[in-house]
Length: 247
Ligand code: SF4
Image 1 (cartoon, rainbow, N blue to C red):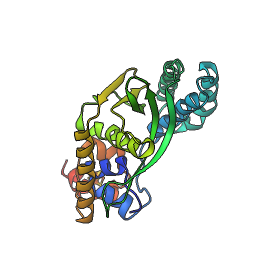
Image 2 (cartoon, protein in one colour; image 1 turned 30 degrees about the vertical axis):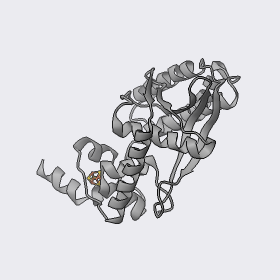
Image 3 (tube, helix red, strand yellow; image 1 turned 60 degrees about the vertical axis):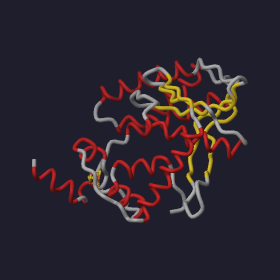
């Protein structure tokens, strides 16, 4: 494997077998899964970035005009017209929120990194949605979330920001001591303070996950909702077949 990523390793945590289908066998999806969440998120991520790159000159009206151009391209992915309308409204509300941000302290958007964890382990690749340099606090990393709000103190979720914090050390010579998830659709930010211990624990997690991959620990982990709605390999999966036949 050329590189690891937070999302790849999290997928292995969620279901080892799905990780195997996707990243070891590199199979094409077999079963249909909803794509509108990802497509909607992609549009908002691009606009979020465009706002920062323009140093805030791209205002609400301009961002909304771009949203209005792009949103129709994903309408067919929604299950119903009502769903599409709901998401359209959420998108406009999100743009309204982030178009008012002061972004003088944003020093990079969608900043790519390749983080070496330990010899013999593929590097962790990722993109930091925003890196900020705050006079009183040093570097701060931010990740845009377009889904439901969760607590950033959830250790598993927090790992994403911790890995970004370590990447800052590689990129700028100093790690980020703070980070936040920016829930632009539902509103609010979830902040965390990131310590050396957090960074060590996140690295240890990557090493542990890589060892599990080397040991071919690709076990299925059945979850009715996740499997039946979001797994594009469910018709290949014996665990899924057995569990659904048993119902
Ligand atoms: S159907 Fe469920 S258990 Fe089977 S591979 Fe997919 S996510 Fe894993």
